Amino acid sequence: MIHELYKNQHLDRYASEFDFIPNVLTSLWKNGDIDNYIMTHPIEWKKILKKRNINSDFGIEKISVVEEEINDDKIKFIFTFPEPKISPECYYAILFIDNEGNSKYFTLELDMMSILQNVGGGMICGENGDKHINYGRRCRNNLKDFEKKVQDILDGKNEQIEMDIDNLHKIILNNKNGINKEDCNIF
Image 1 (cartoon, rainbow, N blue to C red):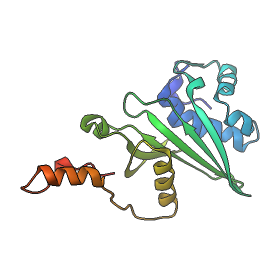
Image 2 (spheres, rainbow, N blue to C red):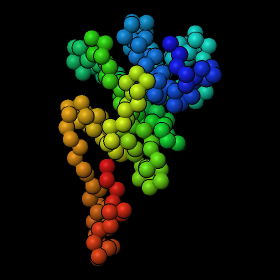
Image 3 (cartoon, rainbow, N blue to C red):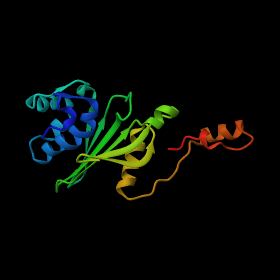
Image 4 (cartoon, rainbow, N blue to C red):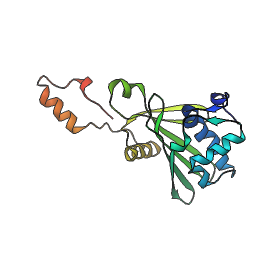
């Protein structure tokens, strides 16, 4: 199973974050073809790619993966990627897999709004097969914030709009005519 994104025999960053991890690696893990050690040691992924005559040209060795057991029938893998340079590269991804073979994959991707407004962070997205999901929630580039917002999505909670209080205070002090919507960064 090799996706069109890397039919040219190279696995780039986009294909790795949005197809290889949530589809290929996850399928291999579910089928018992790889174990948790391989999932958490990206350098081992090169062996999988080599068997399929695919080269990695973005630096798999710079990805770190942590495994967390949630309970007896659910596991979570947290992926930390190198700092994204262009949209839609990711800061982080979280993969949940249960014993029945169900999986959910979430990413925090650098988006154009974050770049244009220089606000940091990005958009929470995900993959389900070849379908890209945009959850419409912004998040700072902070793993704990990302984990909390992903858990809120899983729990079906509506997003609470948060505002940087220090930033709001500065805006109020510097703008006696009121707050301009454009001056506020909302995550």
